[in-house]
Length: 474
Image (cartoon, rainbow, N blue to C red; front, side, top):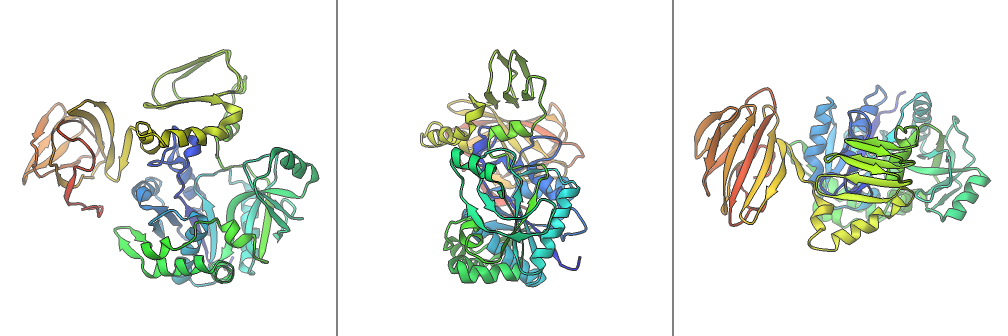
């Protein structure tokens, strides 16, 4: 095909409907639900195809390093990573990507917009639909992918069209917001309706022309954000003032429901947005009692349930239609058939100071050099496990309120302490007094694991003064 097709991968969502595994600091797109790859990595792997240029990723600053690291882990070269200064829903994100792509590849370039948190089996029918969408987009249509519904679903929007699965793109007759259960059942019975997948294909210039006409505030904000963008290590920071001026609105509301260029390609390939624990259960591998279990789990007399643990061994007995999700600092238990209500629990936790952190961070925090996990915390001490990837190093830093002890338990550590460099191996340790200038590096070929014991009057992560940092954080 002659069109230049640029994948635009949207990776900025919070994904809190899959709490407690998914949290603000590490949302569902960066988690693994089946197989060795995260949902984000699976999306990148799917666009590793001769049809495409390297992908453009749109995310926010909080996720910039995990996105870059996960791409590097699978050997995916990114065309660019656009960082949103604030969340403004999909219309502004896609418009900014369209401006960027148009300047990089020209107005005739085609954007294939893909959420990074969907689970898709890219079979022959998938690629046939992609090719049909590329053809339609190259002819000036704004194409969405409509999923052939298998049951009444209240969690998705619907598209009405006379499109046929396996056929060419057809005009959209109507967009329907997430319906009540009775209306969803009627739509399925009537036929001619498809789930709105949130995946799109459109020419950069055509989309921007429609945005200028139908959503001028979005168009203006996108132009300004790209024009005032700045390079930051391997990322492009969109201009903050311009991007903040964009209305927070979905691309469906802003453009697709208003344009006369909207078309749909009807598809029936395996697809799930994994928008709830019920969706995770449906997409999983079931045992003879229709259970999906992952991690250290024992089930007895359990049926039609989802049980996942990433830490403690979980035993469940004589229950039906339950969800049990256990992490090392939180456990969620509820009806599998009512998991759309997880958001209510998250809202309650977020509203209270003593539980807000449970919605934001995991006990394990990931950084571009590796990460750390909280092991034990007291009034004036804290124990952490640090893991540093081969060849990586932390920033050169100091603390005003705490001292640290480092004990190497695996690998080789290179420690810089007030200008002096010491190499430590397993079972060796070093003391870092309060106020010293220090850095931890891994010069070896295997992961470095260090136990860090902090002592002092204040142990918050904001007591870090970075003097030098290769990731642009100093």
